[in-house]
Image (cartoon, rainbow, N blue to C red):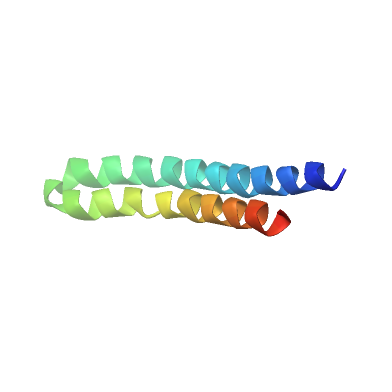
Length: 72
């Protein structure tokens, strides 16, 4: 039963961050598209703004790995 909760905690760490990243990128993507239509010179900033939320998923993966390693 204990390993079930450990696996559930690791999965929740990834699922939570993936959902948060998807929500953030949906909001940022719409704003970036509107900004680029008016000012095309903002493309570098736009790429950075879209890439920043991806770090949440990477950190969620690191937390999941740490949970799994701590359990063994």
